[in-house]
Image 1: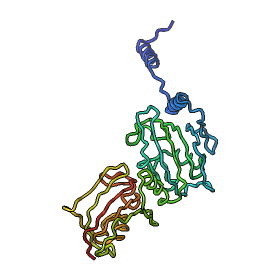
Image 2: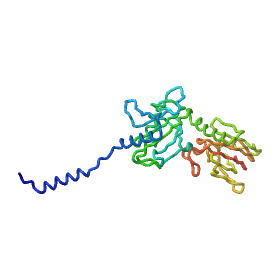
Image 3: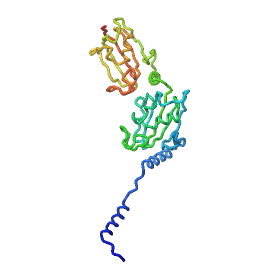
Image 4: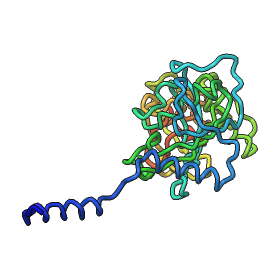
Length: 301
């Protein structure tokens, strides 16, 4: 029997120990699939189907069409779409359902990771839902949602349960009007007139003094403004009236204030595009419908 040097025996022993301690890590695909399938089973989501893309590949996304679309033609990525959505993680640690915040209004092709949304949203809308006016529920593996880094309060490696409600509206004015009308109906508000831009107004007192004639007009006003949840985000009194040029205020005020004269009073219900849009401002969240009562105390042209 030949002699085996001690250093070779030591090396062989090291390799044996190292190999026995080496862990086998599961792929993210395997972990995602297990989590998604367990969630579907635990919640009795028997109508969920696997999404197989046009190339015949099983993507890992599961879907259920909740309401079929109603539009006459199928959507293309170049079409503008308007939708609300809900998102929650499968473990229930993250839930976001606020339809005022969770809105999207732009090209279908932009509904992708580059703009902060899971890529699977655009593809499933186009390939499965296909038409405006429908809704779809998606169970999305983490790697096709926000990945290992997460997004905002959504943690990394979180699989998501999402519902996308695609509006039948083909333009932003009609889309926002859905939410304005919902507010009007819920609060039994009557006596309003709607303009072509989507502004609603009620002239309480037309006034008898000077009339604002252009965006260069300077007016002084007493006002209060509230959100649709009743929160008053700004107001003043006769002791501290606000003076401003019409050119310096939101489009809803630019359109609505010239409908009355000095001494007049008006109520304005303003959709987001005539207010502060998707970004909001200060205490005003993005996509907020605004309800103002305004009294015009002075006008200078």
